[in-house]
Image (tube, rainbow, N blue to C red; front, side, top):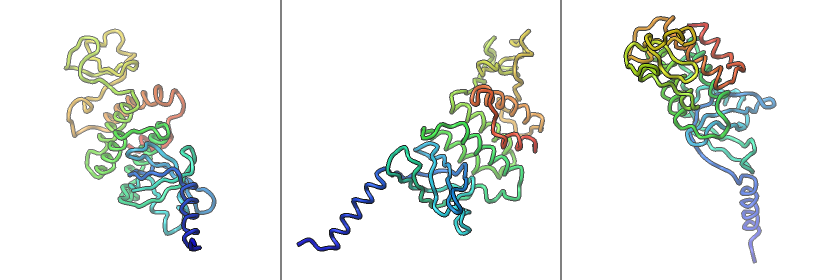
Length: 255
């Protein structure tokens, strides 16, 4: 005769398999959060192996758990759902809060929010981008360095490259020269020298030298030129003339 508790255990195992037939574990960085009901949260995570992914965190906005869903938090997570196309549920294990040290540093905090908003708006859901995951992790890990603003511009270039809009700054698109590069073609993303620009100079985008050479001392104007360059490609090619996330504009205003 089958014992009653054995039957109960078998029923519960079968029921759990039916409820959570889809499941994976991964590492990720939280890039968005919003309330769902009074205490639950829906978060967006850029994961190492599963791309940008949404999920529900039970009691995520409860006072004891809210710190675990901060934007910039690095986590180990498990996602479960009955079907692959459902929202699913996250179980989180925080590993490092990469933004916590900058809550009183408005410039760096705005940079984190800019990165997160760009990733959230630009990346398709559930498309693997391990390179972009490594890029944002590297940027956030070295955010305490003196030359972090240069790293930010380079991070945006990496984002564009990961989305298929990379720059070629190795040589002039017109003459083939490797020296004297000071412009970028808004159509191809290739560098152009002053000599190669010719009569089309007014149609080209300025190229700051720190994006070609390993310079550490740059002015705020140099940085803004670099951000104008990446901003053009973000607006025209990634967001197709739609609004670039406002978090980026707020960050640039503070430089």
